[in-house]
Length: 356
Image (cartoon, rainbow, N blue to C red; front, side, top):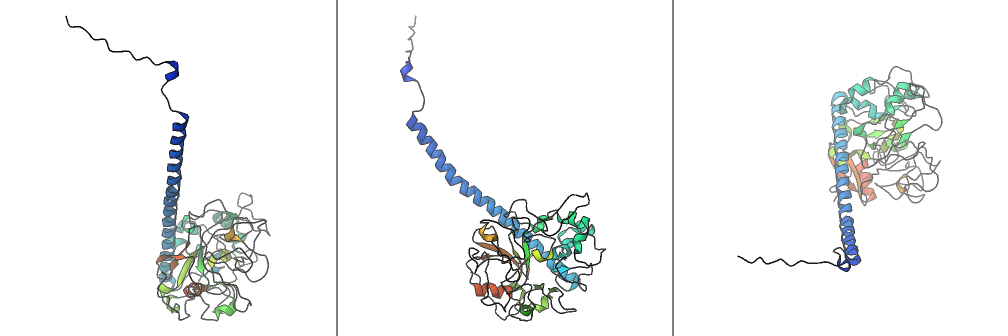
């Protein structure tokens, strides 16, 4: 018979339990923490890259829509108007819908624009006299919104109570793209008369066919070249209800410009994402309702010069803009101020050779 060899039995005493020591556990936790610390910035960067790409695509769509609009009317859309005949009968922008409404059919939002109430006579309340228009304006248009500037942002007029068709109080949703109002003030007629200041759009008035009429250029007016002049740039939508910046349907909200009117002294001019930490380098929107210390990009002061706002974004390092030729480019926030102003002016004779 073959002898069977008994396998040895290993006994583990209570003092020899299998497991991790405290030191080993701490080392594992430390390693996991380091890995998470390395991974999170990469994930955040990837998400921002995706948001920036989506924002770039929106700007591309707006640029293409502008070109299609120009093909139809031989002129860019008015920055503000009171009447469906947006080429001839533009008027004061104080209560008017903006260029964003005129562009709706060209960004595949014809059905949305068809619901807009154009059947009214211009008055102190403008398009807001129609509860249905307020209802439309309270809805976001995805093409006008940059996903990097998140949050639920709605503008309510601080001087009036708006009512939606159901009787509830309502406000206007925000957007993140503004037309180029020139190297000076987008509202100063003095700046409009100065070729070195004029941009493709202006709110203060061209005098054609009537004084005070908002201006939109023809491509032939952009003498510095379509590839050398900004058409649309990013803006940051305001955080408080009484700050008008970014209310997409409202004419005086969706624009960028270089700074104060040329007759101001000392004059304040601000580049993209310009320093907004002190009174000499901050945006001055028409209205502001902040208390305490708000976002550095959304500082404001009441009163003073007519409102202006520079291009701003939540993208690290700069802003994205659409040029008049339809191309979308990223502008570094460290760009020299005079170069930035040259890009805003459409006929100043200064062609920017490179943005690198």
